[in-house]
Length: 616
Image (tube, rainbow, N blue to C red):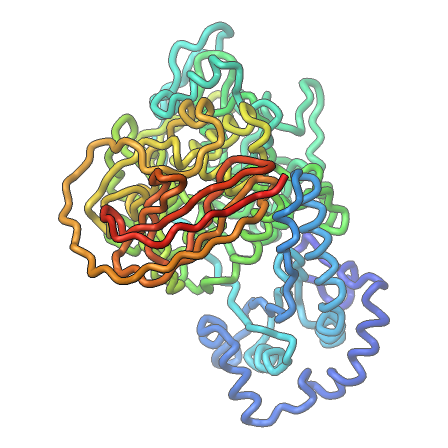
């Protein structure tokens, strides 16, 4: 049903497998009796339909123009059952099957209607949606359908990628490395290597401008290279289907038309076996999907790469051939889809949540919008399912001036972001200009692969955490060096400037499976805390298993302070925004019992005590 090409016309029928014919024919009798898919098309209905259409689509279909837009179906797959599954393979297969089957059973009538009218389109399943190229009339006709939730744009986005500068080439001679990059040292990754963990058995996916796969620091770590020959099937996908500048469209092998993708991949896993130890987890393998054409992305390109990572398929193949057992464990996402340029707030959300449900850790750059508060506004950075990374000045516990900050207001959530921070300035990594070239760049793009590599180290050292999203995030968060800031809300941890603070992967690897806790703060800054007006706080709680981990869901009401201290067994385990709920991933399995109380942060104004019991 779904093609890896940009669009399909009725003369190219690869999208329309015979499995749609019966359902489509039956639905066509009622739904498509006229050129209006609603079968009606009265003025009030057209008015109602217009509320489903994003402003970008209205603007770009004015005066007879045609534009690309997503027709998002109302019926989306329910992935709730994935949380209880213990392994990545089980999670991935379940998520892919639910989403694939939903698309197969719901898209048929729309696909047939589009095909009969020669309207260009592409089907997706990771989000139950169809990308269409059409006029205002087509958008309005589709929006009248009750099974269509919304019509959203597919704008071409020019990411402002960090501008690298050439770096001096390191020695290519074998032997002990002369230096390890400062950001790698500052996160204590070499200390984890010394324990015998370097990312072995973990696969990292690069969603970026592509990768120069033959680079000396990258080729040995490419999953498609066995030391003698290359096999790019299931290891590489190109979602750029026209243009392509340097690499051309649909490149059959990994190619980078900018330095960006090679650099971000290198920071996560790069190592040439000599003096160029540029990566956090040199024992990990990488695969890649090109989702930008020299920085130019679209929601369709972004979603297509997320779909590929959920279930990779052969070069030149299509998603029906997807194999979830070859999905990466972690993905690097140093890109954005700016809402001011036409990206809808939630176009990418379902695809991001699908990866998380499948046990894929999606590590996302906070963005480089600067020092104002609430400027973390571009999908996918502000989604709860994204593990969002802010940037530090490398070698210090000070925020980089360009690093975007929360709280998140664009979706009305007030969510605290970023989640964690890593070195992001003057970072040396691989270049696309030759197999032994290196560049230096700054940005949250550089901080993000530090966290992807740190997660690879954590999972190689502690396989019980592998692909368990919530407890793994908790492990890194808890072990971070917490950094106070008076800007953008509370100065505690986490905060809206640097999240839980600077990643310390050695601490995370050696401290078991913790839950986020307010631990010692680096470079604390005093701040005036307003005195809360206490009210009666009522707490309730229930236990659930999340990937076999005992997890307590706390809910409270009556608190008036901005933040809440969560107490487990008499110890403050977290300070969290006063949004009425908190999930405590205890890091335990089997039979256990925990006693909870919540208090207005820094006070003794507390709730009742609740005990949560877990069975074996």
